[in-house]
Length: 181
Image (cartoon, rainbow, N blue to C red; front, side, top):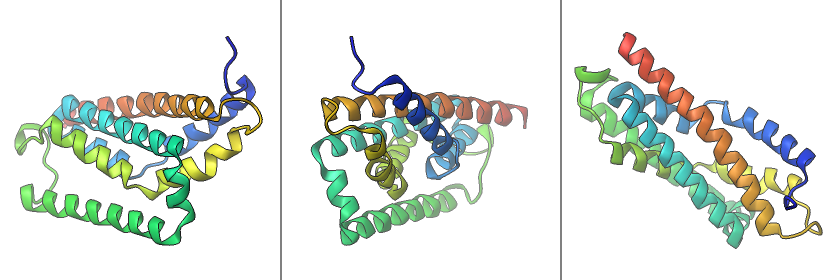
């Protein structure tokens, strides 16, 4: 069986997205918040939400919506503003809920379903992820080199795998820190 992306290109893509994945952003903050306030269950629910968001981005890329949003300044700005608004809403809700970050049993736990939902919506509305799909992917896709959809799916599976491994480790580490504190 032949891969839709040649191995050297896939390794280059994996190294590139690994560098992007480990850079902190809204997803990282939500996973840390979920792990610190709700334990490993909340953290893993947030990790799941991020991966679900990446699956949505993959679907949007396959059907061409990502290209439309990224190429329209108005649509891109609308998504960026929606993302910023959603993050502000989460922040205000967090401040109203407990005033400050409380660890473990010291404050109310956020349900896993909420952790997953918040992470998924934050990822979907994150302009950085849209740019990743629109600006980075084309550098690793060969238009004349076979099924473009299969290439996008393999690149996305690689991104999701690297992202999930990093973020599960992040959630686990935050939960251990929470227990220690």
